[in-house]
Length: 67
Image (cartoon, rainbow, N blue to C red; front, top):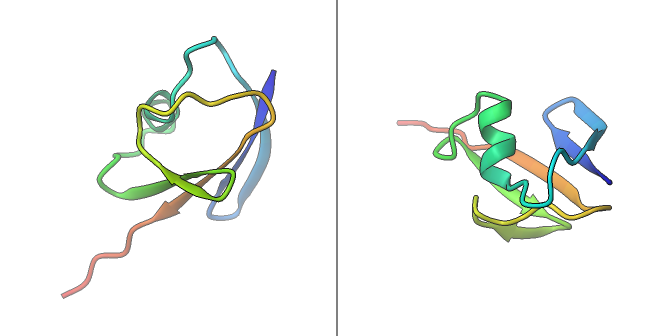
């Protein structure tokens, strides 16, 4: 079981390590904070507790802060 990850210049196929692998698990693995990225699953905005399913496309979008 695998999913496609898109983040900045990254576009790769990744294996799903377990049945309850979530967006939060992915962010932790990538050392990213949920406060600094927006997560999309198959084009829809999702929360970090969302489970990643086989064949999903996960896109992580960096939030830009300014002042």
